[in-house]
Length: 236
Image 1 (cartoon, helix red, strand yellow):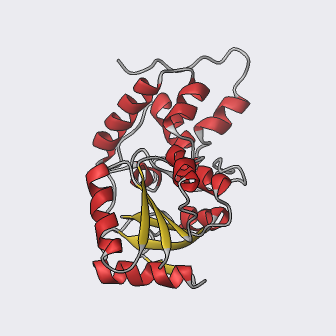
Image 2: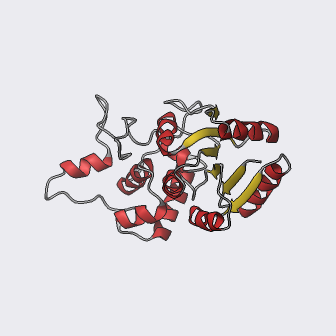
């Protein structure tokens, strides 16, 4: 009976997912956040597998936290879509499976069992370099581009707030406006929407040098700005 930790910030969905797995022979422990995983472990639920429901609040930074807490445990991501470059990067943090949220229950359970057996399971169509349906080409403010650059590095809302010297609530407002502005559902779609140059990420997850003919990313532009450079006015 595979012991599985389920991590989702949506309690109703979490309970339903747990019920589906239990009805098919899985033992489950439910966590509404990565910070709750130690409580599951203290309760004796040493997991064979972790399933992370990727949402607006649970993201790449959450994956890194899980890997730090239970590095021996393979992780399956449950998500709608992921950019290809991020899929490769997740493998460094214990991800051994990526399953679409649209999967049928039996197919989903079969994928989890294969991962428990030591196989790699990518039952998922990656987002190509250019999305199948083009995102709106809406210009972003400098501050919005800075938010997106932080997302590409896998930072969580609290870390973005600290880096940009704003409140976590302000970060959430920016994200809400960005989702509406770009016509996306979550931060992963935002990262893959092409609002920043598609150059490679560095080892730290920071956008690398731009490709020929592209503008410098916001982070790089800051480093090359002269001492008298000033920040563009923020949106009203």
